[in-house]
Image (cartoon, rainbow, N blue to C red):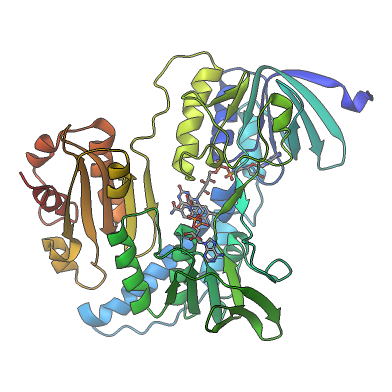
Length: 462
Ligand SMILES: Cc1cc2nc3c(=O)[nH]c(=O)nc-3n(C[C@H](O)[C@H](O)[C@H](O)COP(=O)(O)OP(=O)(O)OC[C@H]3O[C@@H](n4cnc5c(N)ncnc54)[C@H](O)[C@@H]3O)c2cc1C
Ligand SMILES: NC(=O)c1ccc[n+]([C@@H]2O[C@H](COP(=O)([O-])OP(=O)(O)OC[C@H]3O[C@@H](n4cnc5c(N)ncnc54)[C@H](O)[C@@H]3O)[C@@H](O)[C@H]2O)c1
């Protein structure tokens, strides 16, 4: 073993600094542990540089255009000339520091951690090898253990011809310096729906091809229907239940062959799910299967002796708030502290389209599949007083799913303006198991969007 490869003994090694890994490394270092934190790309992971934050800046800009266009109905004439330049500038300068993580590295180092940019892999229990960017190798053994938070990358669907083309991932989309004239979006999940609406509102001709029979298939069918209608009304061509047979790229852009037509676009955004970054991590050296889609963890995020795994790869919801939540639970375990175990009965999620599509807990179908005696109640957002006042853009609904035997909500959905904010009240109800009878005695401020919850509860029946 060369001097360079001498094994260094530390308390904790964190591989992958997504939101959860970064927070855990910071907390462990602040608590006095000797922590080595490693990321092969940017400290902070996908969310701040290529995911949540830049995409939500794009959506904020697109929403402002839509609101300005609604002024014609509400407040008089407004002339709108869309420009992508402020969006690109905000993302580059304000959100990502030109995709530079110097500030995040310094923050972590100031907390007391040793930060490396390099690719790490497990090399047996509590052992890690890092290939540093300068080509050198470092080996660590970790007294407490290793935390792994490697995240995911865009999945490449097996469509003939696709692999050799310059298709866009979310990373290319958030780095765009102009809005393309035309765009084909492959995939109608959260990424596809959010970005299809963004570019359409900036004047891009968008075709959204979704393999499933509906958009956002993990949400309530009613929510999918509202979003599809809105996107169609805004000029997005939505084609569901399709999968391209072939993709070609040439001087004229992309051509995607469907069963009975060819769809064209200057750009092609592939948003067809994610591949977990579990390959090359050395999971087999600790007795785990590197080809699995998720790593099974217990309620303290332990995957093996001295190994904690966090984030998207655990399969408990590919959201930043899940990664952060898990990191707090795992940190307590790393530090030998007691505390509540991880529970996932009230995981919320929000697709930040306009209207926002938000959900918590189970859908009606999931509750039925779980064998519960289910009652549902719903109400259209348009029929609420606030929806009526709001006018254009107020489309949506509130739907609640009750376990009728226990008299508590096990799931809820909100589609509407600020749907993710309205969801907050329902997330409390599902999380804490607040009895429906108690929710019905609440006073709901008039005329708010959240007052529609009272109508949905009334629709459950007696
Ligand atoms: C376009 C888009 C929009 C999104 N919007 C939202 C949103 O609005 N709200 C929300 O909650 N979620 C959103 N998400 C999901 C969110 O980004 C992820 O759930 C979140 O980043 C948490 O992921 P993670 O903790 O698993 O790790 P990640 O953020 O994926 O980070 C993993 C890190 O590990 C590093 N790494 C991997 N392997 C190694 C290795 N071998 N050695 C060293 N380092 C390694 C990677 O470089 C990366 O930095 C969005 C995602 C995308 C793509
Ligand atoms: N606002 C948010 O919280 C937010 C936003 C974006 C992403 N995310 C997270 O990131 C994850 C990944 O998002 P995503 O939208 O890529 O994945 P996804 O898996 O949720 O959706 C991908 C969609 O692509 C479709 N698809 C797959 N192969 C296809 C093909 N060959 N042709 C056409 N369609 C095809 C599938 O039917 C599926 O509905 C999400 O699960 C979510 O957890 C969250």
